Amino acid sequence: MSFTKWNFIMTVFGIFSFLFDIGVDLWISFKYFQQELHLFALLTIYFALVSTLIVQTFSYSWFKDDDDDDKSTKSVLITHLFLVGALLRYWFAVKYGYQATYDHRRCKFQATKQKAVCAMTDLSMLRCFKTYLESTPQFILQLYILMEHGHITIMQYLSILISAFSISWSTVDYQMSLRKSLPGKKEISVGFPLLSYTLYKFFTLTSWIVSVVFLITCNIYIFAGLVTSLGVAGFCWAWMQDTDFCTSKGMEILYRAVVGIILIFTFFNVKGAKTRVSVCVYYSVRVLCTLGILALCFYLRPAFARTFIFAVLSVATVVTLGLGILSLILYYACFHPTLHAIGQTSEDVVDGIPGRIQRFLMP
Image 1 (cartoon, rainbow, N blue to C red):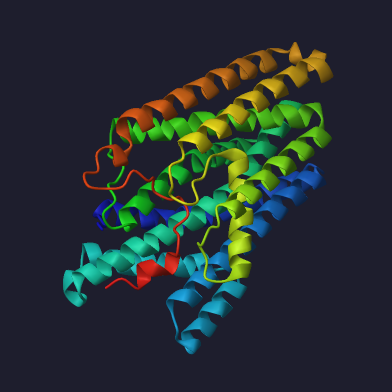
Image 2 (cartoon, rainbow, N blue to C red):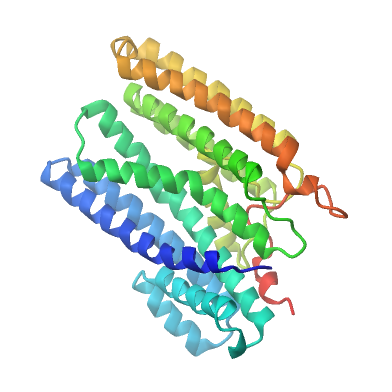
């Protein structure tokens, strides 16, 4: 495990990013109410509230698993009931990160470094959950308003940019943090490996989100049916994988439900086994769905399909999907860390840490 000064700086930056994201959500909701777009305002609040509640639930569950002290657990519960559990986690991450990078004498260096890496990994996964539970729906909503209504404020543009950055980077950041936290696993190298993996996530996610917005503009009921079907299919797949991420059955079911939502937008490996077949099936379905959505636009909304914005975005959707799949092939063919890990199994690294508590029981 390694925890660098750059990791510490990014952890501190994450606190300001977290607070800024809350401020932007509140401001956007307020602007919607001012413009009498009450449905959009309520949806913005709904996505933010639901994602916060789920993130707080996972955060408290992990604290409870990691600490047997009843008094400490009760104080942590109160913190999470006030929906500021993430700030508590940032505090511990900054505390351990500072000790690991600047103050080696205060305690055992290796133990502190392990705590800092684990705290950073937990925060990365919570951010990943929040991205797909809040930032992605927000991004879809903002693009829909821009495409359908044609008017948008500067703060809404800012929200779109923040959402796009969060969506494309959060999964990459979590994958890097996860590999850092697992002993014996080679990290994604900076340079072409990291670039190809980032482009794979960015292009495939962007292409799919634009396609989803097209579907909303065509028929909201078909959109709801498709998203629900994909979410249920993702949940069933996670259930069939028999994941063991959480220590309680209830939390495990919630985890599988969150995985189902994530799988609506991007592939998420939940067991660490070989994923070649699963990835091929997943992105084959993605290609068929994308082409089907574009065909539906021509059939259901021919006037919209003849507009300039549709022409530009439809071409961009197909091109980015193709570039994303090419980046995926390039990454796994040339740069995936397991290709260069001597003496390691051929299994991939799991995106959801199995038996998460095991990391805290290691000497």
